[in-house]
Length: 303
Image (cartoon, rainbow, N blue to C red; front, side, top):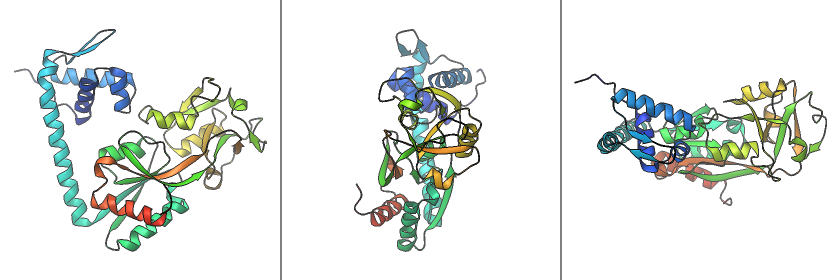
């Protein structure tokens, strides 16, 4: 028997998504990754197993006989890994009474976050609370992997992630202090049409990337994308060097003042929101439910 290397859980998930979608583009979107990255991972899986799993043509995607034979075993393996993860996680969380809360950007310092956490601690004095700062790739992905229970985030959120609205505020444009528009009190989207916009990694949900790039623009003009960043500090440094602009919550003025950058109001830019987010499959888990109830108690009249 030829030697083979055990596939990773991520590779099996990619194979399962492709087997169900039979379309590289849809499978890639479902996995929050680019189509070339998905193709590379599938090829790596086929090399590990020593068989061809998918027959590719210009117009269709079909499972090979080997792919059809392996599919139920891949499903069983992933199901077993999910059960193992839940068993371990359930033991550690229930034994320690711990909830892991993710935040992105300045969300950990926002008033609504402090109110929810204060309510959570008041109603659950024996619950250990860990707050983790996440980058733009991690903040939704960590809910899918189970690394965090809930996340204080900036929607829109991808499918399977549910949210509780906490706050609404304007969006502003962040640009280099040397930009001719930096001295203005306000600008329009049309005036920013030719500016290069910060890009986020393809692992971030497309709906989220489009919203924060304002893509498409109201007039249908294309967005010019620039450097890819994964965190706020990289974003601000890129802008300060004049390489791109970015659209940010108005609160960024208070929390991220930096030499070399400016924040300007945008007259025709829809607002953004803050929310508490969790994976729909975990909504009734005790630690997730405790945070959800704290959010409802802190902000009972919000939708």
